[in-house]
Amino acid sequence: MVSRVEHPAGGYKKIFETCEELNEPIPAVVTGVIPSWLGGSLLRLGPGLFEVGDQPFYHLFDGQALMHKFDLKNGHVTYYRKFLKTDAYVRAMTEKRVVITEFGTAAYPDPCKNIFSRFFTYFQGIEVTDNCLVNVYPVGEDFYACTETNYITKVDPDTLETLKRVDLCDYVSVNGVTAHPHIESDGTVYNIGNCFGKNMSLAYNIIKIPPAPIGGSDQRVGSNREVPGDGSNPQQ
Image (cartoon, rainbow, N blue to C red; front, side):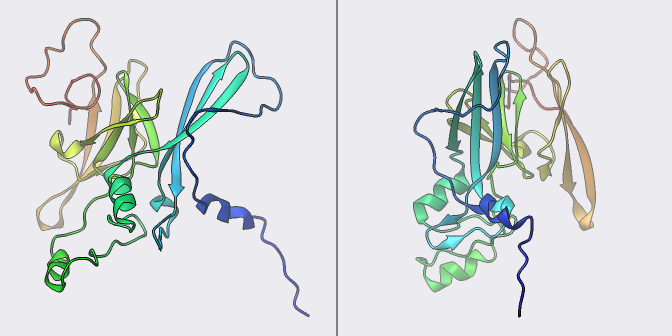
Protein backbone atom coordinates (compact mmCIF):
# COMPACT_ATOMS: atom_id res chain seq x y z
CA MET A 1 0.00 0.00 0.00
CA VAL A 2 1.38 3.37 -1.04
CA SER A 3 0.71 6.29 1.26
CA ARG A 4 0.69 9.83 -0.07
CA VAL A 5 1.76 12.81 2.02
CA GLU A 6 0.85 16.28 0.85
CA HIS A 7 3.77 18.69 1.12
CA PRO A 8 2.89 21.75 3.25
CA ALA A 9 4.12 23.97 0.40
CA GLY A 10 2.04 22.13 -2.17
CA GLY A 11 0.04 25.26 -2.86
CA TYR A 12 3.05 26.88 -4.50
CA LYS A 13 1.47 26.33 -7.91
CA LYS A 14 -0.91 29.19 -7.17
CA ILE A 15 1.90 31.69 -7.70
CA PHE A 16 2.26 30.46 -11.30
CA GLU A 17 -1.37 31.16 -12.20
CA THR A 18 -2.05 33.87 -14.76
CA CYS A 19 -4.18 36.83 -13.61
CA GLU A 20 -6.31 39.24 -15.58
CA GLU A 21 -6.22 43.00 -15.41
CA LEU A 22 -8.99 44.88 -13.64
CA ASN A 23 -10.96 47.50 -15.52
CA GLU A 24 -11.41 49.56 -12.37
CA PRO A 25 -10.55 49.37 -8.65
CA ILE A 26 -12.62 47.00 -6.55
CA PRO A 27 -13.38 47.16 -2.79
CA ALA A 28 -11.23 44.86 -0.68
CA VAL A 29 -12.49 42.79 2.21
CA VAL A 30 -11.00 44.16 5.43
CA THR A 31 -10.47 41.87 8.40
CA GLY A 32 -10.25 43.85 11.62
CA VAL A 33 -10.12 47.63 11.71
CA ILE A 34 -7.85 49.96 9.73
CA PRO A 35 -7.24 53.24 11.61
CA SER A 36 -8.99 56.16 9.97
CA TRP A 37 -5.77 58.19 10.04
CA LEU A 38 -3.96 55.61 7.90
CA GLY A 39 -4.21 56.65 4.27
CA GLY A 40 -2.28 56.47 1.04
CA SER A 41 -1.37 53.97 -1.65
CA LEU A 42 0.68 50.79 -1.57
CA LEU A 43 2.27 49.69 -4.87
CA ARG A 44 3.57 46.19 -5.44
CA LEU A 45 4.93 44.28 -8.45
CA GLY A 46 5.09 40.64 -9.36
CA PRO A 47 4.62 38.12 -12.18
CA GLY A 48 1.08 37.85 -13.52
CA LEU A 49 1.21 36.17 -16.96
CA PHE A 50 2.76 32.72 -17.32
CA GLU A 51 1.80 31.70 -20.82
CA VAL A 52 1.45 33.40 -24.17
CA GLY A 53 -0.16 31.59 -27.06
CA ASP A 54 0.77 27.94 -26.51
CA GLN A 55 4.15 28.77 -24.94
CA PRO A 56 4.64 28.82 -21.16
CA PHE A 57 7.08 30.86 -19.08
CA TYR A 58 9.07 28.35 -17.04
CA HIS A 59 10.38 30.42 -14.13
CA LEU A 60 8.82 32.64 -11.50
CA PHE A 61 11.09 35.48 -12.65
CA ASP A 62 9.73 35.13 -16.21
CA GLY A 63 6.05 35.90 -15.64
CA GLN A 64 5.14 39.24 -17.21
CA ALA A 65 5.03 42.20 -14.83
CA LEU A 66 1.73 42.95 -13.10
CA MET A 67 1.44 46.01 -10.87
CA HIS A 68 -0.86 45.96 -7.85
CA LYS A 69 -2.23 48.99 -6.04
CA PHE A 70 -3.97 49.22 -2.68
CA ASP A 71 -5.62 52.55 -1.83
CA LEU A 72 -6.35 53.16 1.86
CA LYS A 73 -8.78 55.91 2.87
CA ASN A 74 -11.05 56.37 5.90
CA GLY A 75 -10.65 52.76 6.99
CA HIS A 76 -11.54 51.35 3.57
CA VAL A 77 -9.32 49.69 0.95
CA THR A 78 -9.68 49.40 -2.82
CA TYR A 79 -7.55 47.15 -5.01
CA TYR A 80 -6.45 47.57 -8.63
CA ARG A 81 -4.01 45.77 -10.94
CA LYS A 82 -2.65 46.32 -14.42
CA PHE A 83 0.05 44.78 -16.62
CA LEU A 84 3.08 46.88 -17.49
CA LYS A 85 3.09 47.47 -21.24
CA THR A 86 6.78 46.71 -21.68
CA ASP A 87 8.30 45.72 -25.01
CA ALA A 88 8.52 42.13 -23.77
CA TYR A 89 4.80 42.10 -22.95
CA VAL A 90 3.50 43.98 -25.99
CA ARG A 91 5.54 41.97 -28.49
CA ALA A 92 4.65 38.67 -26.83
CA MET A 93 0.94 39.48 -26.88
CA THR A 94 1.15 40.69 -30.49
CA GLU A 95 3.02 37.66 -31.82
CA LYS A 96 1.40 35.15 -29.44
CA ARG A 97 4.77 33.68 -28.46
CA VAL A 98 7.77 34.33 -26.22
CA VAL A 99 9.74 36.96 -28.16
CA ILE A 100 12.44 38.01 -25.65
CA THR A 101 14.45 35.54 -23.59
CA GLU A 102 13.66 35.80 -19.89
CA PHE A 103 15.54 34.50 -16.83
CA GLY A 104 14.54 30.87 -17.32
CA THR A 105 12.64 30.85 -20.61
CA ALA A 106 14.43 31.01 -23.96
CA ALA A 107 12.92 32.74 -26.96
CA TYR A 108 13.36 31.12 -30.34
CA PRO A 109 13.55 32.71 -33.80
CA ASP A 110 10.29 33.77 -35.39
CA PRO A 111 8.88 30.69 -37.17
CA CYS A 112 7.44 32.98 -39.85
CA LYS A 113 10.95 33.90 -41.01
CA ASN A 114 12.59 31.93 -43.79
CA ILE A 115 15.40 29.50 -42.99
CA PHE A 116 18.18 32.02 -43.71
CA SER A 117 16.65 34.75 -41.52
CA ARG A 118 16.25 32.29 -38.65
CA PHE A 119 19.86 31.14 -39.05
CA PHE A 120 21.29 34.65 -38.81
CA THR A 121 19.13 35.40 -35.77
CA TYR A 122 21.44 33.18 -33.71
CA PHE A 123 24.36 35.54 -34.38
CA GLN A 124 22.58 38.70 -33.25
CA GLY A 125 22.99 38.01 -29.54
CA ILE A 126 20.37 37.74 -26.82
CA GLU A 127 18.00 40.68 -26.55
CA VAL A 128 17.80 41.98 -22.98
CA THR A 129 14.35 41.90 -21.42
CA ASP A 130 12.61 44.95 -20.01
CA ASN A 131 10.12 42.85 -18.03
CA CYS A 132 10.27 44.97 -14.87
CA LEU A 133 8.49 42.64 -12.44
CA VAL A 134 10.61 42.91 -9.28
CA ASN A 135 10.27 46.29 -7.61
CA VAL A 136 8.94 49.84 -7.90
CA TYR A 137 10.66 52.85 -6.37
CA PRO A 138 10.46 56.67 -6.49
CA VAL A 139 12.90 58.94 -8.30
CA GLY A 140 11.96 62.50 -7.43
CA GLU A 141 8.21 62.72 -7.98
CA ASP A 142 8.20 59.84 -10.49
CA PHE A 143 7.91 56.09 -9.99
CA TYR A 144 9.88 53.42 -11.85
CA ALA A 145 9.39 49.66 -12.07
CA CYS A 146 12.60 47.67 -12.34
CA THR A 147 14.23 44.29 -12.67
CA GLU A 148 17.89 43.19 -12.77
CA THR A 149 18.66 44.49 -16.28
CA ASN A 150 19.57 47.92 -17.62
CA TYR A 151 15.93 48.90 -18.22
CA ILE A 152 13.55 50.65 -15.85
CA THR A 153 9.96 51.60 -16.71
CA LYS A 154 8.23 54.80 -15.67
CA VAL A 155 4.67 54.25 -14.45
CA ASP A 156 1.79 56.46 -13.39
CA PRO A 157 1.13 55.64 -9.70
CA ASP A 158 -2.50 56.79 -9.98
CA THR A 159 -3.65 54.96 -13.13
CA LEU A 160 -0.86 52.31 -13.30
CA GLU A 161 -0.38 53.25 -16.96
CA THR A 162 3.01 52.50 -18.49
CA LEU A 163 4.60 55.81 -19.52
CA LYS A 164 8.03 55.06 -20.99
CA ARG A 165 11.07 52.81 -20.90
CA VAL A 166 14.44 54.19 -19.81
CA ASP A 167 17.74 52.55 -20.77
CA LEU A 168 20.25 53.28 -17.99
CA CYS A 169 23.09 52.48 -20.42
CA ASP A 170 22.36 55.86 -22.03
CA TYR A 171 23.51 57.62 -18.85
CA VAL A 172 25.91 55.38 -16.92
CA SER A 173 28.38 52.61 -17.75
CA VAL A 174 26.47 49.50 -16.64
CA ASN A 175 25.19 46.29 -18.15
CA GLY A 176 22.60 45.85 -15.42
CA VAL A 177 21.62 47.15 -11.98
CA THR A 178 19.95 45.63 -8.95
CA ALA A 179 16.22 45.90 -8.42
CA HIS A 180 16.69 46.97 -4.81
CA PRO A 181 18.08 50.53 -4.65
CA HIS A 182 18.56 52.39 -1.38
CA ILE A 183 16.74 55.70 -0.98
CA GLU A 184 17.88 58.40 1.42
CA SER A 185 15.45 60.59 3.37
CA ASP A 186 16.17 63.51 1.01
CA GLY A 187 15.24 61.41 -2.04
CA THR A 188 18.76 60.49 -3.18
CA VAL A 189 18.74 57.07 -4.86
CA TYR A 190 21.75 54.74 -4.67
CA ASN A 191 22.15 51.55 -6.64
CA ILE A 192 24.91 49.21 -7.78
CA GLY A 193 25.47 47.93 -11.30
CA ASN A 194 27.89 45.64 -13.06
CA CYS A 195 30.02 46.53 -16.06
CA PHE A 196 31.73 43.97 -18.30
CA GLY A 197 34.93 45.03 -20.03
CA LYS A 198 37.72 43.61 -22.15
CA ASN A 199 39.32 40.27 -21.38
CA MET A 200 36.37 39.19 -19.23
CA SER A 201 36.99 42.00 -16.73
CA LEU A 202 34.17 42.92 -14.35
CA ALA A 203 33.59 46.11 -12.41
CA TYR A 204 30.88 47.24 -10.03
CA ASN A 205 29.70 50.82 -10.32
CA ILE A 206 27.83 52.72 -7.62
CA ILE A 207 25.09 54.85 -9.17
CA LYS A 208 23.74 57.96 -7.48
CA ILE A 209 20.61 59.80 -8.63
CA PRO A 210 20.48 63.16 -6.80
CA PRO A 211 17.24 64.38 -5.22
CA ALA A 212 14.99 66.85 -6.98
CA PRO A 213 16.21 70.44 -6.59
CA ILE A 214 14.22 72.73 -4.31
CA GLY A 215 12.87 75.53 -6.49
CA GLY A 216 14.20 76.65 -9.83
CA SER A 217 15.90 74.61 -12.52
CA ASP A 218 18.75 72.19 -11.97
CA GLN A 219 21.97 73.97 -12.98
CA ARG A 220 24.19 70.95 -12.36
CA VAL A 221 23.46 69.27 -15.68
CA GLY A 222 24.65 70.35 -19.08
CA SER A 223 22.87 67.63 -21.03
CA ASN A 224 19.47 68.21 -22.58
CA ARG A 225 18.69 64.50 -22.79
CA GLU A 226 15.66 63.17 -20.92
CA VAL A 227 16.69 61.20 -17.87
CA PRO A 228 14.85 59.42 -15.06
CA GLY A 229 13.13 61.52 -12.45
CA ASP A 230 13.51 65.26 -12.24
CA GLY A 231 15.90 65.78 -15.15
CA SER A 232 19.13 65.45 -13.19
CA ASN A 233 21.73 63.00 -14.44
CA PRO A 234 22.47 59.83 -12.49
CA GLN A 235 26.04 60.03 -11.25
CA GLN A 236 28.48 57.15 -11.38
